[in-house]
Image (cartoon, rainbow, N blue to C red):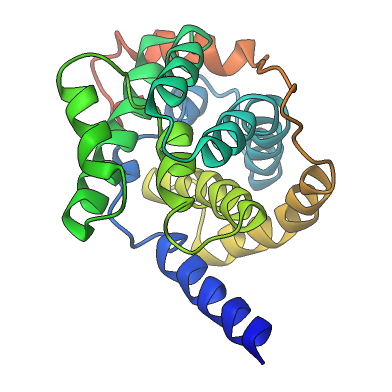
Length: 230
């Protein structure tokens, strides 16, 4: 009975903190998708699906997920978490993607500081003083370890957030309807599940390879007509 109650509580926490309505500031960013639409590199729902799948497999799984898990396991070791934060910063080449990730992290951290989540206020001071950049994956691992989410639930929530943010951007750009977005999200579930089957070890190194997305985000920085920040 106690295990069932614990599972119920963690599931309810997952629903709260993984909800796209939870304030995290992600609505302002397209992750390079807007530039790819403008350049006619992505035109169809199937290509949107391929784009998000690539983000999950070639960036989230190999970099963001690793950072999240390592920070989750570090608990209250904020110095070690900050070191991972700087490593993520160094591996995010495009300024728009780098700034967007940090702004998302700052927004999520600000909300949790008001909720008085453990370590949120202290790490927020580190960011404000310039000691840490505050990337979103790092902040997720830092906070969700103290919000009743298991490590695997935290990973699932993070992957879902990537999908939700990018599908939301595509809809606001008028490239997808709600039904197409849900169909794509449904097709992405087995992609996420397959990635989560392989555990992240303490020795897993972070890496990312998405040159088309990085270049699109860099070109987007100088675009005069844009809806999103990246």
